[in-house]
Length: 170
Image (cartoon, rainbow, N blue to C red; front, side, top):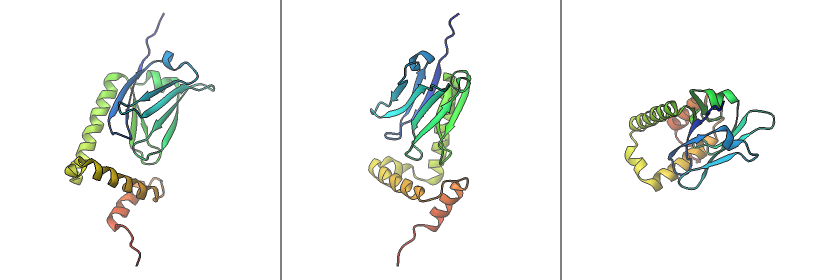
């Protein structure tokens, strides 16, 4: 009896910002190198491979913190979950959705709506339309976030940092 197990994976590209949805199956990653998914912009999004010790290893280039994260997944999370969400280790932002195609697409839609609401609440829609300004500001923001201790208080620390503003030398 042949069982057709496929998982759908959605990951946002940290270079161009597009969300890429990929379908993977156990046979495509059975080789030693596994598979590497690329974005339409040409950058690597993730690598998924089988581990010798069992299970799977997923390396993701993270849009939230600009680091590569390594996740260890079991058979159940990858092939049997309706929806399994992976978060950034530092910011807790959702960075990967795994599961059935329908559930992954619904999660991506929810994620996009939440991001749009945040952008509207911050009043920065027009700001985001200027790609050069956005890129430069986001890079500066990430640089300042790196100076904050990554812990459970991350959100509070970022709010405090924004509220106080930058420290100026006298």
